Length: 299
Image (cartoon, rainbow, N blue to C red; front, side, top):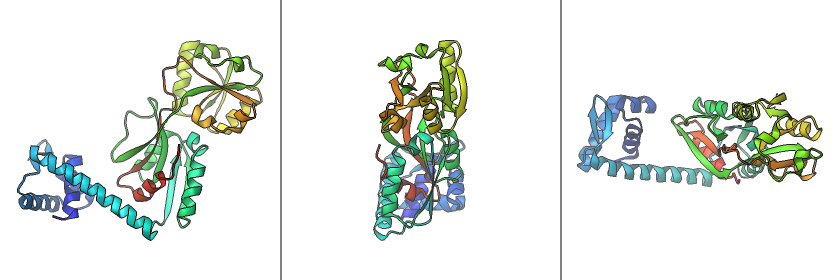
């Protein structure tokens, strides 16, 4: 029994296919089949049933495969620890992030990471969640910081891993300090009717805009932008109101100085910020480095 055999078992289990496993691992199908057959002969238990519909675990095989996955997880942990101890992390880490996360805890995490790993070149790009996911899938970015919501995706594609930050944001209206809306402790969508909006330009906020249209019978969007700072400054200047995640407004100088007022939005069932988290490809070129960076993120 060796690690290579265990990795073959894991890949066949995850793909339910000898051919797909061979393709993913860049080896021949016969090599995987023979290796697993030798392992089954060694332990005396058939791990898989092979049929036209695919390769699936046997009843006894499921128990063994669970142990295999645990072993490989521990092997990965050992490799990570060795890399940390010997400081062999190297190269470039490309982080694709949504603006709300790049403005909040990313700078602090990046500063701590660079202190420990000054040899790593880090590049950060701001994109919306759907594009971030696509970049990770195609290994054009190594770590993605996103928000999952009903407007983002029906699910993450394989082989993407999701690491939740255990933070749930809430939707808040941001209004000028001299607006009558600023006097409210909370607002309903209907309270926003007849007000001019400055909205963030993304598919998620397009969905929120549609919700406002249904409730208010329309919405007056005077302009959209991908820059949250432009939105907040425009609101502070009295050009209109907007909506933002509470995460984006933590320790915000516009809010703290009183130039804009953030008012919770009640009666709106959508968890507007979705579930924040980091994603990386389990087969990505820098997946170990991406996982290491996640250790530095504090929400």
